Image (cartoon, rainbow, N blue to C red; front, side):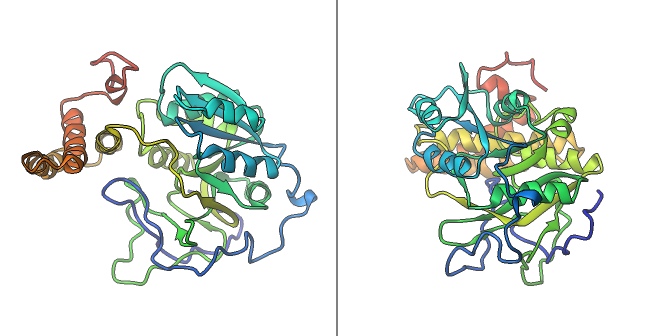
Length: 345
C-alpha cells in the first residue's frame, strides 16, 4: 500500500472490533468535543473549503426517520449534495429525506447495506462519494477537510474523518479481521494526532474516489450486513491505494440508532455478524471461525432457553445459527429473500 505525500505518522493502535463485530470507542475520555480542526485553519475555498460540489453523500436508510434530520441538515450545511437510498422503510424516512432536499432512491425491499450503497454510488456523478450512516453528523468544515486531503494525496483510495461519540470519546479502529497485525498488547493505546495512514477505516463514514470504488466492484454484494468495510479496505489496499485517517475532519456519532428497534433485531444482527465474518474469512483464505462460534454460542443459547432468557436466546442463538449457516454453505442473501437458497456462495 502506498503512502500519502509526507503525512504525519500514525501514533499507534486504536480499538479493535469487538466480538460482536463493532468498533470500540477509545478509553481516553475527553471533556468536550474538540474543534473540527485543531491543527490547522479550515481550508479556504481555493484549498477545498467551497461547497463540496465534487462530492456526493450516500446515506442508506432503513426505518431511519429519527436519525436522518441531523445527518442531512449537516450535509446541507456543508454544501454536499445527498442521495438517500431507502431500504423499504416502514416509517417516514423517505418523506424526511425529501424534505431535506435529498435525491431519494426507493428500494422495494431491504437490499442490505452494501448493495444499497452500490446503487447510490452508481447514481452519483461526482469524482468522490461520501458513504455514511444516517446517525453520523458531519461537523463544520469536515467535507472541506476531506476533499482537501483527497487533493493533497491523490494516491488515497479511501479517507475517513475523526469520529467522536456524544460524550467526546474518540472512536478509532485501525485494525480489522483482515488487518490484525497492528497490535501493541503490552503498550498504551495511542491515538493519532494528525492525518495518518491506516490498514483499516470504519465504514461508518468513508470518502472514496468514485471511479476506483466502481472499478473494484464496490461493496461485496454477497454480504447483506457487516464486514463489508473490512473487505473493501483490503481490496483498496491490494490495489496499491492508501487508506487515510483525516484528523481535521470530524463527524459526531449521534445518540440514536441508524434504524428503529424491531422484534428479532438482535437475533438478525448476530446472525449476520457470524455469517459475514465466516464469509470474509473464507474469501481471503483465513481459518474459518464458524465451528468455534457454533460450539461457543449454541450451549449458551440452550441455557438461555432453559432459563427463559429471551435476550440470551436472541444473542447466542443468532450467533450460533449464523455460524451454522456458514458451515453448511448457506447464503445471507437467501436468508433475506434476495436470492434462492443454494444460489449464494
